[in-house]
Length: 257
Image (cartoon, rainbow, N blue to C red; front, top):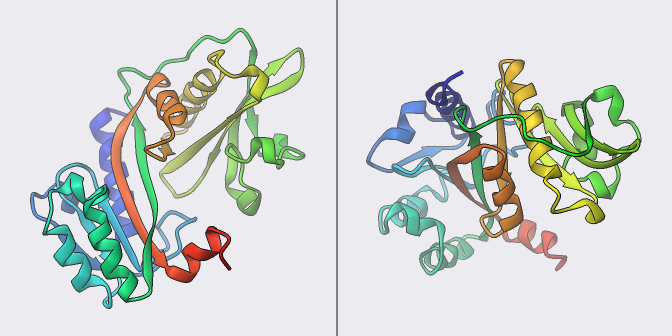
């Protein structure tokens, strides 16, 4: 696969998620569509969206309910694309959403592999490719980024780092959709800053590509360690998302309910 092919696959998946067309992400004008369920969407998404903004850098494609669409359309056309995803502008958006019982909730940056940079990175620890049958007993808090207990059936491939037989780092990938697998990574505290995360991430990414699937990586913009790992592993920023949820949902996450 080429970088352009990888990008096109990602845009097609975002189109399934947002109920739009892949080419919509390349337009110069912003687009608002009504969110609907789609069996081809990423499996962990809760559809239809109340409001989800996606940008690959050119414009914003907003997938929203009919109730929120007028608010969304006015907002995304009031500020430059990049400012719609940051303060102080999104306070304006959040204020309007709260009037309808919603609040901004999730912000994330997504990364795709750069085929010209992705390569197997060295590690002083033994690296093993793992499969679903190897994950039994690993659904514990220390490996909660690499594996998801709630969606075990989607955890199909991994890469583990071993120190004399002891698992010290784990990268896992979730088959979130037909064409793209998401990578998560955990390293035990005593083994960090030794290049284990990037060695595992790059090894797993190459294994995913060998299956003719696209690996992708997600990080909060403020998670500097995770972003550095993505870059070191051969990934590059591809798109961003901003999602609104009900106020009750946000309060529940924050422990207020």
